[in-house]
Length: 352
Image (cartoon, rainbow, N blue to C red):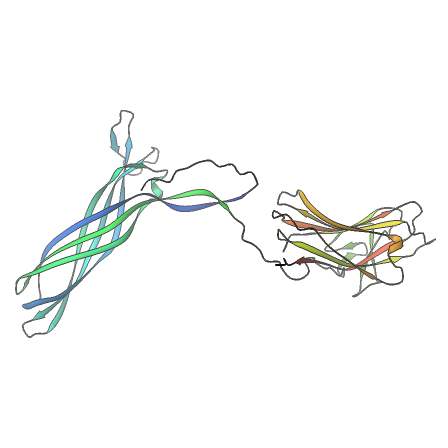
């Protein structure tokens, strides 16, 4: 078995790659070892009932060589890590363990055991180059033992065992592999932190939201607090936003729900727009999608909160994060502001 072919492949789309360490089979060889021995039984025997044999403590030691410029192959001294090396042989060591059951002169079945160390050196079909000899080792598969015996004398047992196994020379290599993202389920619940806008550092800074020209208000849809956009100066733009990374999955739609109310100030001139957006980004922070809905000041009631809801287009498969953003844009003469409360961003499950 030869080293797997290596090649370059250029993806037309960005892909995710991870570095992993995997065992690569350099070559597999079949090993056959014959062990012939005599053993003296503890007592006289009439016959051998059975012998159960197994192989224990298998070890494989690769033998490394280097090919010189002249074409000669030389053995690599132990500890030499500077040369490009090849594996030429494998030295296999192990122990043949035998359980011998015999019948004595009293017609009783007795038992004895023995352990026979063995060594076998096998050549690879041809020397195989490796990247780092400290990462090369041997694996053993399909181990089988066939044993024949002859009771030459009542206390003398002759045995011939044939051990057959497959030895694989393996090298641990660090490689990069392309990973396919596992399809992720649409997570339930609100993806936003503090969607009710209850937690504030001070009167103008909600803890989990970014804010500009925003103030805390106690005129709420629910809870204790809400956010009022344009409160510091109704003639300047205002924004309220939050980045979301937890639970944003690709290939889904998202539903944004919020409650809003107009606040009449000064001369009561309502000349502003309120835009709600869900902006999607990939891992590099590049915008790859958006869903939005805009309201005029005249369409927002000033007597009570009203619910606004919209669903975004289906997101790109590469989406990694989203930003919920409310933008307050005043025009000439505007006096009024817009309140926001109970904001919910939910993933919409795919329909069959």
